[in-house]
Image 1 (cartoon, helix red, strand yellow):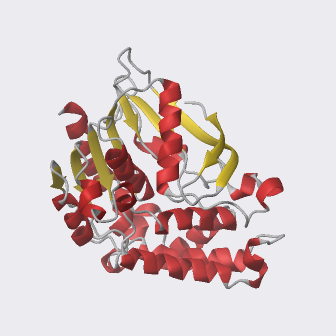
Image 2 (cartoon, helix red, strand yellow):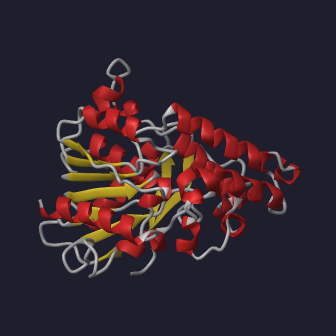
Length: 334
């Protein structure tokens, strides 16, 4: 596995803005076959990279590079693909354009064309990775054979949108943030962002059962401090760029306005497994159930876990990851 860079040039965005001299950072595992149809597309999640997804890629997993050509494109704004943090000379951080999930998918399509991929055997992802995979299946139905959406959704539903408002407000309340024109990292804001974010990622039962000990933490405070350290490693404008992408995700935009969500998801021809966690506070089973009902070949498989949203995180919880791996294997062998 080697991190590579695919140059996109100037990209016209759905917002009407232009992303100049853009690129995608990506990694691949395995070899594309002669037919170009053994590709697994595995987009990254909100604070993830190709290395995060790599935790469930390997001979011991369903995503075995001996059989599959796994492509992991990094989300625009994650600091590896084009982002505020690596284009300060052009955009000054806060001037970075608004990039949608649709824009990410169109850039990824150009990457797959470059790689000579003709068919995607499986598009999958966790959280924001699932959002991108949903958009892929609706935008390019003839290209996507199977879809696995793990603890994610085809759109940012209102409850999730309201939560994201809260973490953004926590970060922006730090005066050092200076409306995105900071000269030093807004440390207090980043820590506040992490503190608000952390409990929502799990569940009440997760803390009651002290499951944080499975992650190597002796207390809730130790877990919170780890989230702080993680978020201090991120650029604030990168976080908020991806947050905008998340909040404005809506596969409905791929269909005429009068058709809405039903029209967009009705285009999906892939076999679909929608895999929420019963304790997820971001992407709820009820909303996933609505989405699955609008797809011809969709199955709802609920992960029963007090790990909440993080039940679907690649490689984070062994039992839950094994459940996800089994569904990947099911779709790839079907």
